[in-house]
Structure formats: structure tokens, C-alpha cells
Image (cartoon, rainbow, N blue to C red; front, top):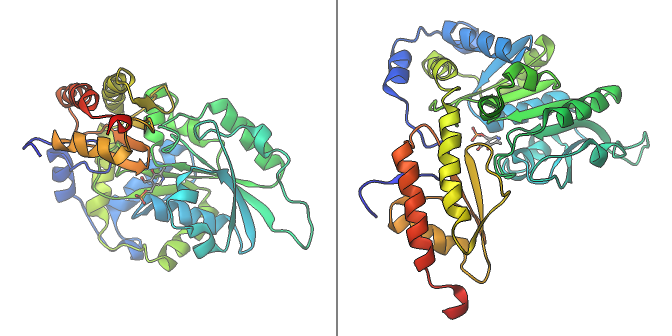
Length: 353
Ligand SMILES: Cc1ncc(COP(=O)(O)O)c(C=O)c1O
């Protein structure tokens, strides 16, 4: 592999910037399980304010944040409705059933996006044989949906329906900041239709660790107990909360740059025979690519790119993902696009091997 690597595997591979490290070093701290860490408190207040919720809770990861919310909204034997490719269903080891005794019922969205018409008649009737439908979970932007932004009006329609039917609505907003930067719609507007929202600081925002959940004061109080149960109570967490605060202040608007870089790389994919963008439009920082079956397997394309120093994430037999972030410069995005254009056409197609 060449000395200079362009790491497009995930937006979680970023390293804290010098400014962020300085903020971490200077953070005032205390024992957060005792509620004595002033920096964590400041972060929680800031997140609650940005999302327009009564309270927020700092947690170690997006997975824990989602799973705390599922547990706080439900009882064992309940059912949640979600999109078939969402992180909560696919990438959290069945946490909803393992940790909360909840059944997930899935629906195939349009690249991750569900329409109310798919859900409307899916609430289980009050019948002793049946699970009770309690919660709907959406994801914005949608990772496996190719970084798609949920149309706000679709969310609002689902929200009105859930609340008219005494269901709760949760948002996995691991990359909500990307939706904010791409649309100009504020985090508060995106969050308003939801009872609970989970956001991450360790993806596009570039913090080394951490997520937060937000909702009503009661809900967050319940979430705090569950965080302890799940082993997520942290002590002098101000050191990492400072990084998250720094990221909220300095790294949201710049996500638009990542989106521009993603389009540069996406154009190279579009121009390359044997590769296809899924979905065809790249709206944020994620680029999902399908490799044509008679051309190559995804792992072969991933390996060929790696040889030239471009790392992408193999996500299935015929699928890989590339992802732009804080540590990918404009020059690197252009270089990655150039390497894709050079390397892939030189691969020997499956049919002639
Ligand atoms: C949409 C989405 N939700 C949740 C998570 C989980 O975040 P974490 O890796 O911090 O557990 C991820 C991780 O990539 C994600 O993409």
C-alpha cells in the first residue's frame, strides 16, 4: 500500500483536531455518575436546546443511545416498527430483543425512507394473542439508504399518526447533523416530530467518542437509570464531552464540504463501468456502491483500491461503501476519484477470468 492512505471506510475514523484536543485538555471535570461534571452538564444542556427537548443525556455510543431509548419506550413483549435496513435492526446485534424483549417488525423503505401508507394499518389490535405495537423508529440520514435525507413532510405525517394512535416515535439521528448541513433545516425542526432523538458526535462531527439522547425530562430520567443498567455511567466524562461541545460549535457547517467531496467521488463511480451508485443521488457524505455481478465481487474492487491507498468498506458480496469526513481534504477526494477512474477499468471482468 502507498504511504499516503485515503481512508474512506467510515466517518468514525477521524482523529481529534488540535483545537478539539486543546478543549479536551482544558475541560473542567467531575464525577458524572454523581452529576458533578460541569462539562457534561453543559453538553447535555446544549444538546437539549439544539434539539428543542427538555433534557438530554450523554452516553458512550450511538448503539447504547438507541437501545436506551428502545428500552425506555417499551415493555417486554412490545413491538417496534422500523425500516428493514436501519441500524437499530441490522447493526445492533438484535439489541431490541436481547436488551428490551421487543420484537422488530420491518418494512422495506425507498432507500431507507418509509411512507406513512406502509405503516398505517400495521398497529396490532388489542388481542391476547398478539404483541402490542408501541414504537416506531426512523433513521435520518439513513446509512444503508445511501446517506439519504428523510423528507421532513414524511416524518411529520408519520409523527401525527403515531401520536394519534398512542405510539412513540424515535429518531436514530447518528448523522442528523449531515441532514442539517445539507438542507439548512435546523436540528430542532428535524427533532420536533419525535419523542426521543439520538445523535452522535463521533461520526461526521469528528469527536473521538460519544452520543446523546434527548426527550422529555421524565424520559431522560428513565434513560439515565437504563444507562447505568447498561454499564454506560461515566466518571470524568467532561474530557470527552468537551470534544463533543467543540464539535457542535465548529464542525456542523463544514459537513457541507464532506458532501461536496462525496459528490466528487460519486461522479467517478458514475463514470466507471461495472459500478453503480445506490441510490443514484448522493445527498450527504455516504456513497454506497453496487458492483455488477458479472464484473467483479465487491471485495476485489476493495482490494484493488486498497493497493493504491484508497480504503473503502466492503458491505456485502456486491456492495461497498465510501464515506467522506473531516480527515478527507478536497485534494484527497479528487485523488480518490482519480484512482477509482484508473484502477477499476483495468480490473479483469469476471466474465473473462
Ligand atoms: C445510523 C447509525 N446509528 C447508530 C450507529 C451506532 O453508533 P456507534 O458506533 O457509536 O454505536 C451508527 C454507527 O455507524 C449508525 O450509522
